[in-house]
Image (cartoon, rainbow, N blue to C red; front, side, top):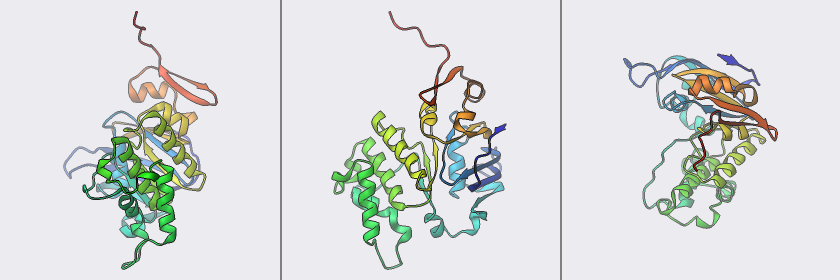
Length: 270
């Protein structure tokens, strides 16, 4: 495994092994990785390699047979869930909500961890909600039921909710898969901009060109292990793409960023 050290990580996994059942084969094997403050890290690798499992383990949805997950040096198992919700936001691959919930109500749920026992959103919260809707381009649809929105609009609605949570760490599992090109770029550009405010972003991505365009760091996984991790420009290469994806690619710099294309382009139709 090749590794490039960046900065001191705020969120760490140390020799993590995870299985979906006590006697089952591990999905993650001896995984050690750290995510640094103010960095956008992409998790990439073939389907089934453990990317989503890693995020679920960090969130505490899956028990780990061995190893440790820590936030600022404190084991996550020792941090109350409500306190964690003020630090870490999570967007899974698939999301569902009752038919009656409006977009405004969904986004308002993002501030729940900040409310007092008998209180509700304050003016700062409501400003965050409005800003989140504007950021994802849905400001005119606040009264619409979420389930009446298009697939791409619903995905942006869920992203607005986690933005409204206003945490310093955001974990996203395939956040742009259902979006058109315009919103793929605008959402990833937004996430990159959040790192300049000190937020830590970790996202599962499938497109290596999007990864190269927006991610500061990349973690390349295969078969439940980390194959390579480090700065994106130092880690994505023709060699690493071949070894991780079994795919021959040309990787080259253009306009200050990496581009990944098939090494053997299909013949154009006559």
